Image 1 (tube, each protein chain N blue to C red):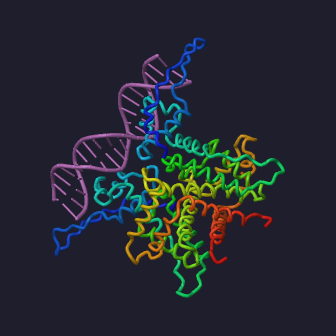
Image 2 (image 1 turned 90 degrees about the vertical axis):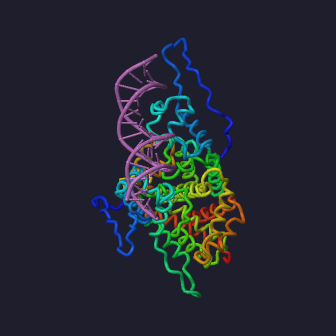
Length: 241
Length: 241
DNA sequence: ACCTGAACACCGTTCAAGT
DNA sequence: ACCTGAACACCGTTCAAGT
């Protein structure tokens, strides 16, 4: 959660009328600006209090105006999700003929995606149950699928590898941010530890035994552990081995 | 999505006053009844239209009454999530000293969990980003963790194996139900196929190449594929091998 | 083409009051 | 102990009207 709480409302942007085209005002709003403002509002105030009306206020516009630019809140959420995915850096594809380190690049994308999501932690709730069909989502999908196909996976497994990556990273980031806003990932982990330690004594023996192991190393380690598992699970499906 | 649309509203339950205890009326509502009615309302009308007020109407009660029994909507959602997890059958632990087929039982739990979730497809949106600390969630966690510890995994990996199971199954079920209500999983898959086929020609070469492979086999196969991956990823972390 | 005023049909939640 | 009436402070969305 980046702290931008000191930025205040956006400065009003003057309508500019070019002399050559006197009747045509620049639109005050664009989709890109709306999405940017939405991400900022989410970062500052969190998901629970986000609303179209508050977004309109922040943009210094009356709220029905937003509906000229987006069909409904869900469409705005699609755009926001795509913007988040767009912040995941994609490694360059290898030169034609060069052997590609598919596992390394897959891991790199996974880490970048986790980073992108955590940079917009308040947007996590709107990432689940949404097909990512925006340009950034498609680009990401195409890149991952291409990586796996290039490595020799059949099309089915390649497609599925992409989905596994998404499930894993979003699921993980979801847990990292599951204890409500305001707490960092590590602090959340400690609350969970606490909750487990307070469990009725003999009722959940394995869980209580776990409560210390749970916090002894950080979230990064856990992420890598799962990622390693994901990769070795994938590698087991590679045809020529 | 089970079809219960013919069931109609719940019959009014009479307040019963026992002669021995004349002043004490049976409460009209219990948490269990509220949760049952909520699941039914979700199944009949879907998540989007679910509200505390509609739930109260279905229960033939004025809506503030619900707040005597639950603190707020989020707490009700916690209870609903726990009820869904409670429908996942848990295999019996092996006798002490008997070798346990950990991978088989892990897979069994995963399949049962997917089933339980799909039986309440409309409740999927409220499963993400929630720690499952209700009795059923804890029991499930304890069972899975115990299974993995018994198999020789260290505590850390055992705990993480449980989380991976959750991410995977919820993520998968989330995708199965991601195209809005009313479509079955397989129909959704076809919409996605359609969407991919309509993509701009050369922009996403790997994705368009995939669009047929995507639908050639069913969701059950895909689920098993990912599950196999998950298991072999886990197995790779087993200390003594 | 883009924005606003006014309105519709809702929400979740609180709280004093009833029984 | 449990339920209700009435109210508060909101929502998302539509649509005729303005410029």
